[in-house]
Amino acid sequence: MTARTAAVWAVLRRELEKHADRSLTVLDVGGGTGGFAVPLAEAGHTVTVVDASPDALAALTRRAADAGVAKRVKAIQGDGDALAGLVEPGSVDLILCHAVLEVVDKPADVVAAIATALRPGGTLSLLVAGKAAAILGRAINGHLRSAAAMVTDPEGRAGSRDTLRRRYDVETAAALLSSAGLEVEQTHGVRVLTDLLPASVIEEDPQGLLELELQLAAQPPFRDMASQLHVFARRR
Image (cartoon, rainbow, N blue to C red; front, side, top):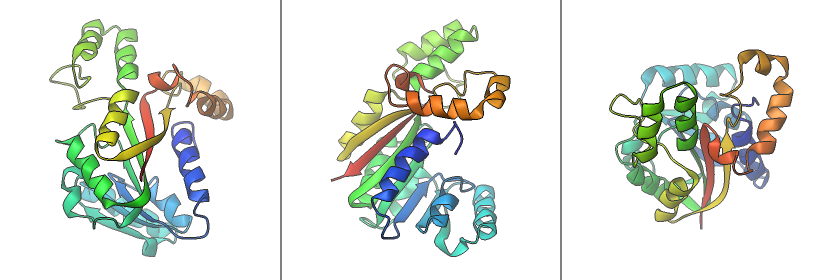
């Protein structure tokens, strides 16, 4: 666990501990090379990864084989916008959707498909780009016009050359999930400090940074200024 993912793993581990007596069915949307999928499979859960990149899925397959969990990891090529046609309704206990809603055509449709795929009581781990951090980052680096554009843009974009199609704050992320019938239980900031500190500081005391990230992750205003927001929700 590193400072970049500590807040996410802390939430996931608490949820997994509630189901320590059984194997969960997990879906990782945009799971790439298996940074989350393989550790979850190593913990005894069955994981399906949906990703648009064949190269990423090939790396996932190799990684799962090297870890001895190839039988518990399934790779499906596809993107978030096609999720509804790739997963059986009511078949999944836990869905990870990390860094996906920023780039899909219709995020509301993706979240609706996720809600449909979850069993009653199933949970969603959603990770999205934070709008406030992007604005501050551009301003600090002297890109004031770009920062100003993001403030007023409804999607939090810096213009036509922006690599992301949208960014979120706590309220807009929660509203998106609520509209699909999911109940938000926790919201944390991810990479509150990690993206702001010089590499020398991170290398000097990685444990100290990890502990401070976890300490600040749930505390406004630090949470709201994180590079990413982690929203954990449940289908009732």
